[in-house]
Picture 1 (cartoon, rainbow over the protein chains, first blue to last red):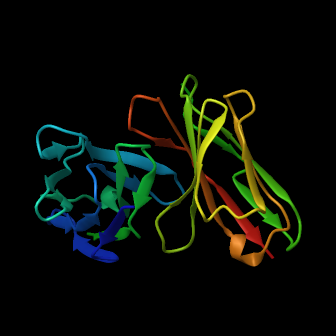
Picture 2: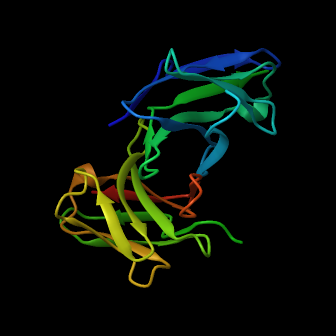
Length: 113
Length: 113
């Protein structure tokens, strides 16, 4: 079984500042890795994913995450945040076997002007 | 493609009553997942279907919970004899069999009084 730890429950950040959300996982087998975002009163939306290949993955709105197998981490970064990035962010992993997702507890990002 | 649809969005019930939620996946998605999300936590896997077959159930899915996907299209999740601890957001997601990308609905928020 796999588990996910998001090391920060709340991250306040000023607009145009960088942000990093930390995610560590544990699993005895190979996994896929995901970041989902949940805006207020909305469902979960896929932000980016690592399935294979390049360990650095990017989203269309400026986020990036790097898979580090030796440190079992998949941290999410954005060099300059906007007010609209205020949301809750969830890191998730799935095994190749059945694709069911295990989520971390989430990190609430609050961007202030 | 209208995305994953869940109905109702909100349900308030009294302890001991039965409730049923519906999920309509993205058309042609043959995998359908149910998750439960409590306040301050990430979603937790409950069960999933491939077409009409229920392939895995979490230990979280007590005998008061039952899920069906009779024709391999929409799915229902029923909770019998609801308890206050059942209060949560119930999320549905769907995916293609050979694609490890799950698309989530907006969820059904259950409040048990």
